[in-house]
Amino acid sequence: MGLSAERLRADLEALALIEPAFARALQHVGHPAPRLRERGYATLLRTIVGQQVSVAAADSVWRKLAATVGDPADPHAVAAASDEAMRAAGFSRQKTGYARSLAAEVTSGRLDLDHLPADDEEAIVALTNIKGIGRWSAEVYLLFAEGRADIWPAGDLAVQIEVGRILGHDARPTERATRALAEPWRPHRGAAAIFTWHHYGAGADAAPV
Image (cartoon, rainbow, N blue to C red; front, side, top):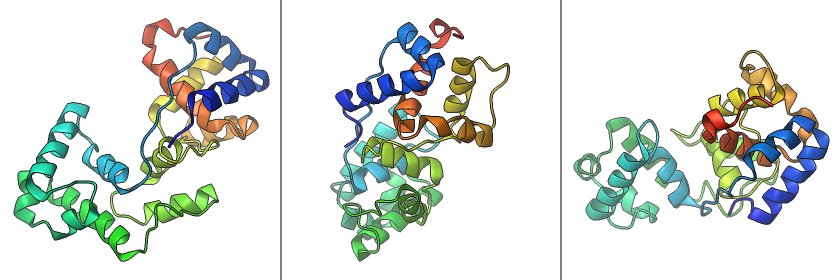
């Protein structure tokens, strides 16, 4: 699973020593809760289900999927499901294709989620070979489900916004700039990402520091 509360706290304290702006922001909004997901197929399928819909809508689709095709955590269930069953569960044609791509990769053995490459970039490539899993989804999976401590989803809008706010920039940095700004934060960039989402969630209370 993802970074434990203890590891997250330790990494943020180390980050605060590297970047004083993070130390001030941490004092202002406090430590974030860990973001933990189970490793494996079900978490990636939930990622596909949740694309471009609300959390409530995604939960509804997941329940319908269980009712129409069986255990959603079993890739064979999706692989064997008819188009009609997937539509009844609330899947669009595109998402049905994505779900079947994931199920096929897992059931064939081409994708072994228990033994992804140790190198983060190689693991991202392995995950983005699945239709419907882009770089952001792969990064979030590796951070939340595998607890890879130096994952840095620089393409995330909230990460960009909060990096700019925390560092006192006048404008939101680009993805490229966000990636460059975080280089000194290695190997704690995963904790930095989780903190930026926490800071973003604090909204108006997280005034520039």
